[in-house]
Length: 189
Image (cartoon, rainbow, N blue to C red; front, side, top):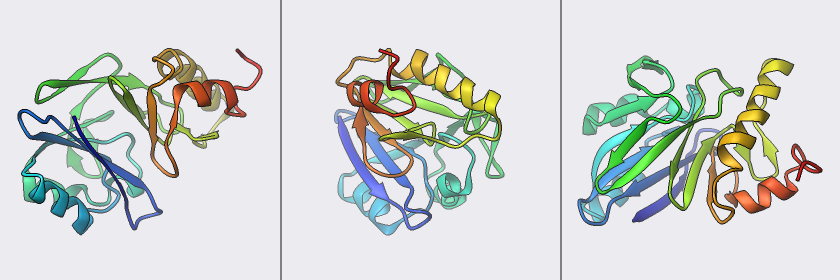
């Protein structure tokens, strides 16, 4: 598996490339901005950007989507059929996305936004703004906050403890660390 993290210039949001070593097929997770480093990494690695996964439809995760779509014509996956004005393949909990010989599984982590989705590939999960290192994403209501925390418990914290959590902003973490030390969940174990 090929993996690379990029911090974009839009709200210091994270973007990630995951690719299959055998087929060179790549997926881009979130695209707050289509930075030159992303294009350079794809070109130098001889990777074919075939797919984009959007964790949620906020501008700091989608601002570069039109540019990526126009340049690479990838399949775009999101929790809604229209994302940042771009047509997407709507995915929900349990759906799978093939990435060459790898398989990503979509997890419902709504709450920060109604369409928030995470992508799990064995060994790592991409949570967007649902879960951060030491925090969670803001919500519009108490009901949405409770839903988000419940879905994180059920869909993220049940993953293997060593699973890396790659977030929409800030540093990465692990399931073991967040399930034990994240202040929004402390005292639950």
